[in-house]
Amino acid sequence: AKKKIYPTLWWLYRDGLLPSDTHIVGFARSNLTMDAIRKQIQPFLKATAVEQQKLEAFFACNSYVQGKYNDGESFQKLDDHINALHNGRQANRLFYLALPPSVYEDVTRNIRHTCMGKIGWNRVIVEKPFGKDLESSNKLSNHLSSLFSEDQIYRIDHYLGKEMVQNLMVLRFANRIFAPLWNRDNIASVVLTFKEPFGTEGRGGYFDEFGIIRDVMQNHMMQMLCLVAMEKPASTNSDDVRDEKVKVLKSIPEIQMENVVLGQYTGDPKGYGEAKKGYLDDPTVPRGSVTPTYAAAVLYIQNERWDGVPFVMRCGKALNERKAEVRLQFRDVPGDIFQSQCKRNELVIRVQPNEAIYTKMMTKKPGMSFSPEESELDLTYGHRYKDVKLPDAYERLILDVFCGSQMHFVRSDELREAWRIFTPLLHKLESSKHRPVHYVYGSRGPTQADDLLKKVGFRYEGTYKWVSPHKL
Image: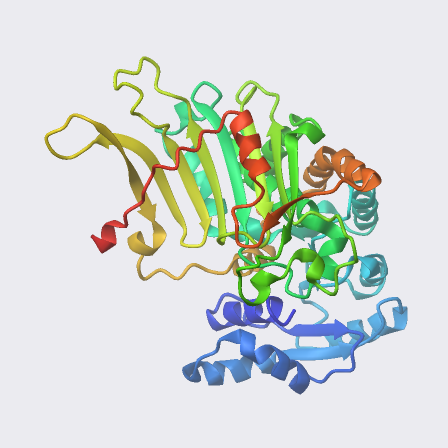
C-alpha cells in the first residue's frame, strides 16, 4: 500500500484524474493514525516543493479506520465512517484488497454484507496471487462470484498496465504490414523474456512459497503471450478482447516436463555484496529448498495460426540484466542468394527498461562491397517521445477501474485456463521434489535453457551489435 497504492492515488489526484469528491479510507488491523501513515508513505510520493499545497489537500481527503478482518462489527464501523463522509451514502465505492490471500474470504464476505453502497457502483480490486493452483484459484473465484458479479471484480496484473504490453494490440491490429506475416508460415518462434538482475535480498521466505512459475510465468508472461497470439477481437470492448485471449489459452495443452528447464541461483565467488550470496544463503529461505528462481518453458498453441510454432517463456532472478521483452523470430528467407550471410529477421517489443520496438533486418553494408549486414528499424520511445511522461502501470489500471473498463484485467475464465496449463507441472515438481540446475548470480541463466531454445529452433547468432543513432 505504501509503495504502490497510496503513491498511485496521489499521482492521479495531483494530475486531476480522480473525481473531485474522492475520499480515501484505509482499513487494517494496525493501530495507526493518519500522521503515522503519512510519515510512512511520504518518501514514495515523490512530491516536489511546488506540490506541497496540493499534497496537503490530498491528505485532507484521507482517513483511517482500525478493525479486524473477520469481525462484522469492524466493517460496520467502516461503513458508518464512509456514510459520514460528504455524499458518503450516495457515493461509488471502490475496495482495493491489498491483503494476504488467507484473509480474502473474511474481508470480501464482510464487505458484501456490510459495506456495499446502495446507490452508486461497487467495485473490488483483487491482487495476485489468485490461488496457488487450479483448485485453490477456482475456490477463490467461486467465493468471489458468490458475493460479486464479474463486472464488479477487477483482478489486477500490473503488467497489463505497462505501455508496451498495451501497445501490442495497436501494433498488431492497426498496421497492415504485420497482419499477413503474423502466423506459422512466417514466424519460426516467439520468445518472451523476463529478467531481474537481483535475487531475493532477504525476502526469500515469501518467494519460496510460490516460486518463479507462479510469481511471473503463469500470470505476467501468459498475459503477454495471449496478446501476441490472439485473433483480432470484434472491438476494443473489454469482453471482446478477453474472449479472444481465452480462445488462445484453450488451444494450449498442459506444459510437458521435457519442455521445461528450472534453475536456482548460486553465489558468484568473484561478485560483491548480494552477488556473493546464493538463493539458499537467504536466511528466510527454508534449508535445502528446491524452489526454482529461473524457469524456461516451451508451449505450443494448437490452432490454425500457430500450429507448430514454439512459444518460449523464460524468466528468472539474479540474472545479468533487467529486461522484459517479446521477440518474434522469422523464418529464413527462401531461395538464399547471399551465400548464407543473412541472419533471421526479428521483431522485438521491449517492455522494460527503455521501452522500444525494433526490427532486426538485413541491409547492404555501406561502401564498395555488395555484402548484407545486420541493421535495425528502431522506435525507442525515449528518443521518439522525448518529453512524454509515461504513466506508471498502476496509474493506468486504477484509473481504468474508476472508468469501469475491464479490458486490462483478468477474467475468471482466463485465470482458470492459465492455471489448467500449469497446475499438472507444478504438482509434478512438488511431488517429485525436482532439483533445479544451478546458475551463477549475474549470469544469463542455466546453459540448459539455451539448449532448450536451440532444440525448438530458435537461432541465436550473437553477431548483432546495436548502435544508438543518437550517439553517432
